[in-house]
Image (cartoon, rainbow, N blue to C red):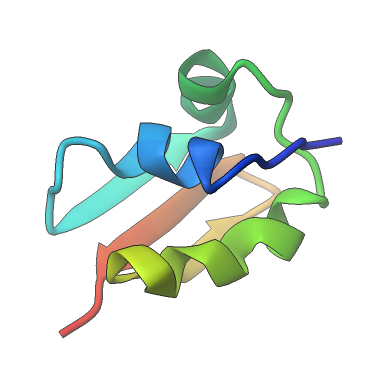
Length: 70
């Protein structure tokens, strides 16, 4: 399960300030040092604080698509 401390996971994923991110679960694990699991959905609510939103999540293909809010 993820342990969030002051948005650490979100900050690590979004530190490059790109318009969008499409990351495999493995990339999320490498960036955050946490396994990707269903608990990640709990933390998607952090994204708007940083100007992003979860656009799509594919459990079958194992990736997450995060975009900058307009």
